[in-house]
Image (cartoon, rainbow, N blue to C red; front, side, top):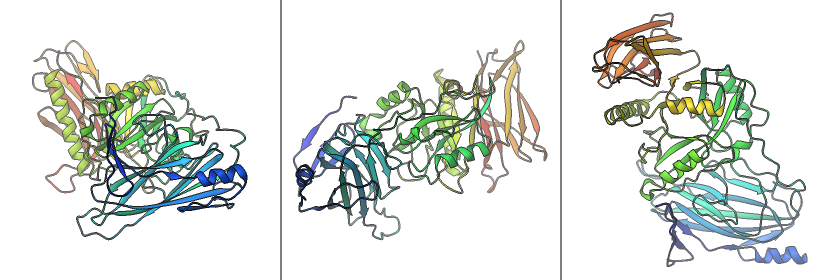
Length: 531
């Protein structure tokens, strides 16, 4: 059910009420008032107020102007709702909001979750799920932020500071047994708006020069200082070029602020797509290549039955829905929403680890189910999820056959599964099947042949010295070849459509712990066989 429901539960102890919004439950605190500060701003006198102070000092983020500060303290119990809203009554005449917060991190026994508290803000337009009020989110990556008409902390959106009820959003990700004690300090700066207003955003162009129809390399899951990364967009762009990439996708946690941060960094050789990593409590999804400036809400769990609505929002913005690291081991990373709404799935995330092997196996099961039902199959992707040194941009990378280096062509290639994943730009694959009357099908395509007609599958590899090449079908791995030490080699296998519903290729390193398989160096999307 997409329509929001609002039920007000009678307040419990203290000054709190519980709001159920049709998605995650929200604990709403009593409002923070700056009424005295507003009066002082109007008549030139100083306001007081029992929870804060008003001074002529600056907040350190703006210049000049009188400020007023309020501090709120409280403790959240174990089992607190996913989000806690702190209403802030912002009077007229404010040109900057600054928020700082701290919380206690007591030691906890092994196996017990400690405290983790995220933060963001919504403006006077409200906190409705998917509504227009979002103004920024930094999760647990920052302890303070500011917003002005002309500037904002990375992760937050510059724009007018209008009078009305704003909401600081706290996200108690985990709460220790003794509770989560927090302190939030809000400082308002009074003064005229910025002379130039809010700068018009410079969004990346939707096309780069490219090489016409060709295989293009990209990394679609990267973090910068606009969420919990440590690299600037300029550093990321330089590393992307050094890694041999043709395109990247911005994918900050629960914010679109980075979309406007790439001016001067794109070029004929680098296409920059704009997206978001929608980071819910039940899994993460990369919204890939959306219209610049699009924000997708994240405040729901699988039990709320809202993901389908926001998957459609991603597609309406021109993007792809790509569940990320579906078997990731971090809290909340494991994908719980199913794959019916997925355009592709991120099977390989960063350096290859056991959870990637599980994701690969689950994806293969999805291929079998799609082949059995005759329904749409879900292509696989790989991305670095790089945050900071030593995370390597482009490890791994998705290589897609696209008609040109444009947003539309790249997304069309990814959606169709005309792609493979490689650990670096050193590794290149060519994979396809021939049969019937001279028919040929490449990666992501179907070779239409009679059930018992002979089919030849061929894989060409460069940049993988001493690795092993594997042909994988709906039965499992049916053919393996060791590649030469030169790193360049070819493998062929003969089959029929009645024996193999599809064939895909894997290139692997030597096993580190036999009989478990070695880490992937590359893998392809499948070629389907049959009429």
